[in-house]
Image (cartoon, rainbow, N blue to C red; front, side, top):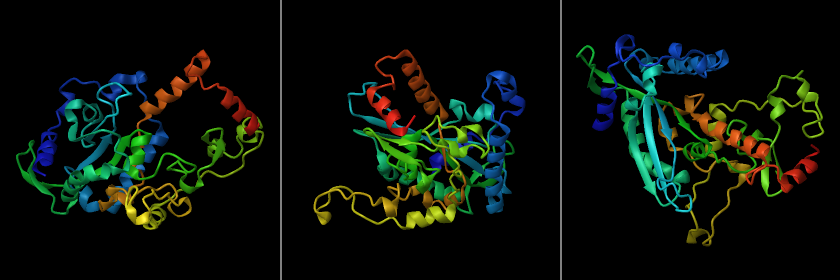
Length: 330
């Protein structure tokens, strides 16, 4: 606990007027991927909802809001060598944008090595961190010193969300990113179809406005699409789904015949566990718990497009893909 408090203390001094002469959003100008007004409004809504729910936390401006980033990688750079390394890093959103994304502002909490990817077992390793976060959230907080004023005060902290790619999101959230209901936003309303040797996710036109011409087009799958967007699954619905999860012994245990029990998708949907983050009092009230790292998505989509255009050995234009298109009426 003292180590985390010391790290947060190190970040308590914010240089005034950008005295380090770092680039700011204004300096970057047109070269930056500035968020749209809709995105800004969404984040403002998230902050406002939390501030309304927990005004005692908000009234002390020195209380810390954290973002947790985690991902696994192969440290040997050789995919044929089975090994995984998972760093877990915290950054604070109390700092201005030009400072909170700097490496010097990162707090390395965990470094989890292992012979394979952690999967849903990552909660075992997150336990010490979660216990520290519970103490930091406690109404008493942790006594520390404001470096700028030299005064002592009780500091509290909370995790605003996690930042990760899609597989890591599955490990942290407990909602599997595979299967017929892989979309964590659509939840049980995920539209998917089975094609040759894989699952395809369809129904993207339902996010368009009703009069949009693409909804009436027959070029996608030979049909029009007038369905509504997926409903928003609120806190009560999510908690009710998690409460239905059975408690079972992991793996091939003798108590169930030495075989691995398959998930009952009608009851458990795509949940594989109740995430350890739900032990934090405020977690279930957050409207955005997990952020996807857009860098990975952009990279994968761009590579798929380029490889298909170049018709190399990684092209998506395969014989099976042609059969899928014919089957779907495209």
